[in-house]
Image (cartoon, rainbow, N blue to C red):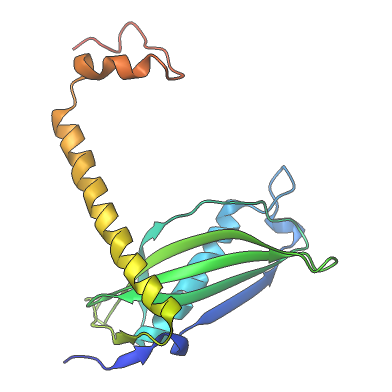
Length: 188
């Protein structure tokens, strides 16, 4: 049975967490793994609100840490469903870090989590369609389609490269790279 459409606004989710010393790495900055865990949490909450059921993460795209997050910052993770397929949802997440003392807010990351809705028996569940309410909603939906097309083209190209890669013909590509080839590396 086809599910009804739900507006983007119905599942928008914001998670805010204080960055404590236990989250810091040896350099005094917040571990990337902590931030990834929080992104996964907010992606789940957003996707589950839209789907009305349990969802699982199947892929994560665009995890570039643009700026470090400091101990004492408030991290805000804003999530919205950007795209839906039949059983999948793409959740866009914008991460900002707020310095409570100065009030400065810095954008630290934008990422995209693809989630799949699950039935109680573990099979994939059909998700409601997405009602695009704003121009930004339409732009994000179209950008998700474009990212999907680019990913598919990239995977085809990579598969083609694996099929047609010959070490001898492509060895010249290593001359400007920071590597050295062991004498045993090129033996058959």
